[in-house]
Amino acid sequence: MNHWLVKSEPFKYSWEQFKKDKKATWDGVRNNQARNNLREMAKGDLCLFYHSNEGKEVVGIAKVVKTAYQDPTTEDTNWVVVDITPFKVLKKSVTLEQMKSEKRLSQMGLIRQSRLSVVKLSADEFNVVLELSENK
Image 1 (cartoon, one colour):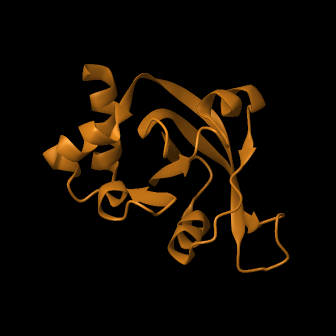
Image 2 (cartoon, one colour):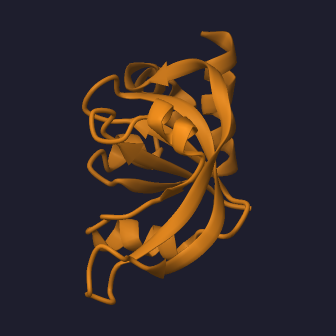
């Protein structure tokens, strides 16, 4: 199993809306590296759901339920989507500031490539964020 972080601007698509929808097609990704990460996702992989711009915090965990397929928002076959469902609400959100101050996350993609919208995480990075959500 791989671990990921997906970003969403909460004023466009929030964790609360995602929970109401019960499923989302993760579309509109137009960065080659982020697209490659979507292609690498497998059914059952877990994704930290990160609110970008406003909040700047991990608020929940999503699960990949359908692997990469053609992005229905474009005719360009270079772009793909995955389907995700809400898996778990974090006990407490984990802010970008907290992650930046955690030495064990110094190599995390979110910190090193802050503009990337779909980031691959190591199992250790994923678990450190979960630990921070319990100990805040």
